[in-house]
Length: 242
Image (cartoon, rainbow, N blue to C red; front, side, top):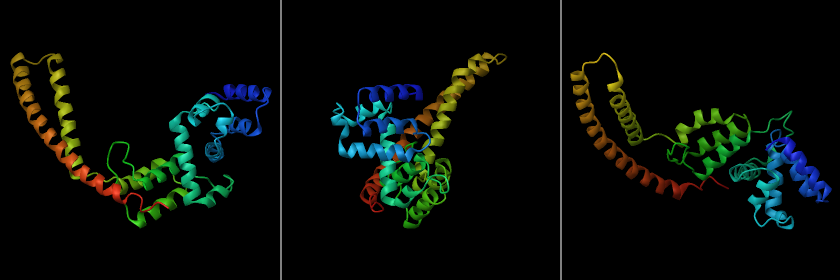
């Protein structure tokens, strides 16, 4: 939602005599891109005290969508990141953002997800890291202020290492897709003899059948392996939290 729309909301709320906290939330929404911590702090404040009920909303997310123009995933990222910041690096909340940088919301969100043991975006499961890895991640986020792209490059191999079964499954899947594409386009290539096309298509059909069997086997191995790993990770995921 544009700043103009938020300005209109602020003016309308002021005209109807809205209380200071409610107006302050709209003002902070306007400044959101400049300081996510201020916005997140206010959201947690309103959520924990249920102010939105006094303002006619039965649901916190409905309030955020209607008056702050924020969708639930954004609200959850902000509030979750702020709680992680307050719990694990409260000194960062004292920074002014100028002389001392404040880590980005995405970076803190990455840290929080690492502590919760969530899988990577591509589904690669979480592997319980050592205390040293968690300490290194904490320093990279809160002291060095690394962007989330750098965090993924550095820590994804440690937090979400690819297993042999996953690598094998992905390689076979890529080969399977390549065979399908070649089979589909082979007949569109000018200059090839029909007999050659027929010969290659028969070979591709046989290869696709072999890959189908290999892919099914690889995915079953992956499911068995990651099912075991997920159960183990679930039991240990909260050891670093707190």
